[in-house]
Image (cartoon, rainbow, N blue to C red):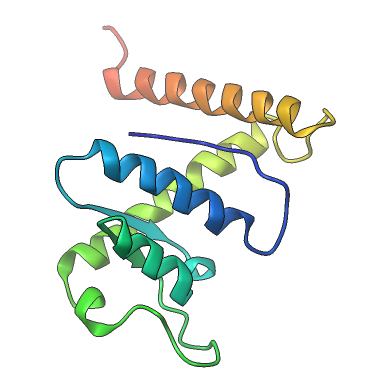
Length: 139
């Protein structure tokens, strides 16, 4: 399942939106799910919200933060954690494509609703481009 949202920029907007999207995904899933994320998500609140929703947080450990990482050895020791950390880099390609090709680097619209429409349209265009690549080109 995929989901995308645009939020008003704040220090916690990305994590708050992620918690909402993960709660929705966890309700639809029949088995526990995982989420890969960067160091910005390595907070006690985000990790606790994930676990409360039956989502295993495969978040990059931020050992440089005061108090240490919220991700402990019981999560980081598994091979799945390393795979999630590798795969999450693939997600960054989506945003890179959107910024260079999809014109989301600097939005030309005002208002969250219009920016969200541009963002979702860009994500849909990327999915179509990716589907073409996955399907292969006819001979």
